[in-house]
Image (cartoon, rainbow over all chains, first blue to last red; front, side):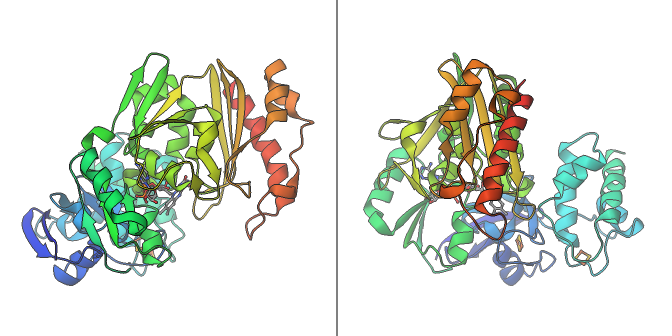
Length: 155
Length: 266
Ligand SMILES: Cc1cc2nc3c(=O)[nH]c(=O)nc-3n(C[C@H](O)[C@H](O)[C@H](O)COP(=O)(O)OP(=O)(O)OC[C@H]3O[C@@H](n4cnc5c(N)ncnc54)[C@H](O)[C@@H]3O)c2cc1C
Ligand code: FES
Ligand code: FES
């Protein structure tokens, strides 16, 4: 079985996986990081979004072996201790979630988007979150949360 | 997904050797954004996967004279963000920015897109519309010879795309009427005025994949304006019909998207 070596949320991790193991399965089942969700079979919902070497990707559409040697950040890696990441705080503040199933993916996509755009507009946010589906909120408060979170990240 | 043997070669020569050895049972993988979903659905079940991800030489963008060369494993995000592509062929950068979503664009590659030749994919329209040249580890293939029908290309078993060379056009634009859920093209039209003449390529609509529209090209050669193609109709007979759009609707959309593209090209 192939061995993969990763840095997950700042910690070195080594695991034996089948070649077909998806990164999301490694994270959830072998590493116990169940904050990354699986919401579909078709690579469309974005509940599984994590950062691989600083880029948001769908962990359900990447083999664990493809990520070998990479730095992976999951939703569990955003907060520092008890202090939420500004984007997480903004989702709470702006009621950017209802059931919360899509939220980890939304937050991870949003953080990557904000890191790459110095001055996000509402249009940028709506386009930037096209790969993340939410069945509950109607998106309005998510967009408000991301705009606020992006501003807070710059402070 | 069924289990398979995974290889991540560090040279093109090794990749070529591994994929030839695997024979019919082998699949190349670039971004995996088409291959992995198909393997998850068990529509593909290769015994061997040869990952091109470690071949760093295959990724990158170079301006060479009056052409832009894009390495096969260059991601959609990298093409969209490239200052060179934006400056030389803005329509191509915009097309890349409109593929799927940010997460798909972070991994999906130009080589994977054109090798796959999905009838609703965006890049085939640009490759055919600009008259690009596909370079493989064996030869160069002109766009007009490359796309052979639904998910079919001129690539031989085990042949690896290394780069795509796009001649810089005088003007060009791409307009897509997209499926709101997948962002794939229901109809996409790429229009370019190039040194070799006007080219119009349509994706999303054809039963045999991407195709050119000679009648529009002729009309635009004399008069590059939306008005010049107002009367040009594409017959619905060889167009796709599915839950998203009828063949007649697609025929209508080709006219609308082509006129919008001509106007956008300026
Ligand atoms: C949710 C979602 C939405 C999408 N929306 C769009 C869209 O709007 N428009 C669009 O055009 N596409 C869309 N795509 C597809 C996406 O653009 C893929 O990235 C692309 O089609 C395939 O590129 P890849 O690098 O991921 O290839 P892979 O999935 O790795 O490979 C695809 C095929 O190409 C072959 N291949 C790969 N590289 C080479 C090479 N260098 N030489 C020879 N053969 C090669 C492989 O063997 C395989 O058969 C979408 C995908 C997803 C998951
Ligand atoms: S689980 Fe739906 S996109 Fe990954
Ligand atoms: S909050 Fe329920 S899916 Fe988004």
